[in-house]
Length: 190
Length: 82
Image (tube, rainbow over all chains, first blue to last red; front, side, top):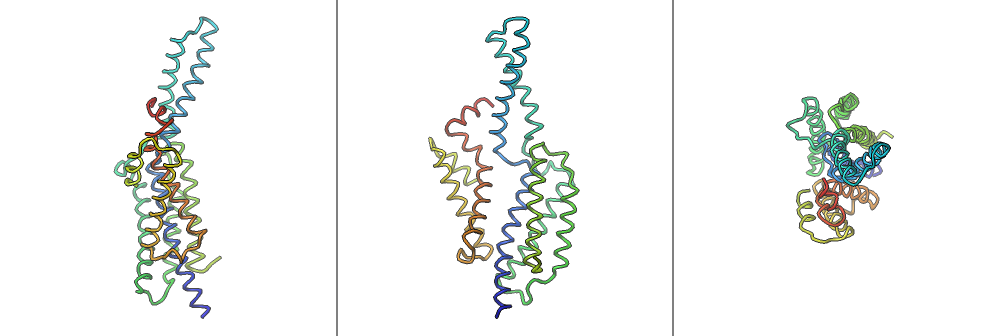
């Protein structure tokens, strides 16, 4: 009885875990595609800040020699605004299309999708009572995760903007946590 | 996600809390749908775990709908500048 209860509990945890794995996948994909519209707002706030600082610093220097009036300040603000656009592109980047990704990026995304689909298919089989022996093929599934971890650790983030380079480390660490949970559930390892 | 963005864009003169309410309701529906697809009933999942999934969904929805929310209130000023 204890064994049956334990298996039922683990099966339920496994099904919930598949949702979390999918969330983790999406986060990695959205980071590589630089898809986060909060950037639009952050960019604008940063642009105003940069323009304002630029106007005051350069305006102050010019002011040492000639009186800097409204027109000079306005021109400096506009120059600062244009400069901020260049800086923002490096920091926040722009959304990327899947077809514009490098081959190694496409390969990583399709590996992530393939691994998720494997687990989705196991989950569907559980739900349709097609499985006689639960939690089999652990070695094969664990190997897939080891390969993915390797790809994530060696992933070249040079094509990403600074914001997404930092975010990538964070989302990868989230994915690795899901792998640990997988081991805890599927192989019942703590 | 496009449904949510369309819905947010269609709301005129809403307050931040009204936008948040739309996002939370959308996220709840999505999480329940995902649970159903995964063969999990709401009773199978603990409150903490449900809240964790919901929180994730809300974060995701907010990240992708901020642009649509720019249409309302003070953020419009920033949008006009850019």
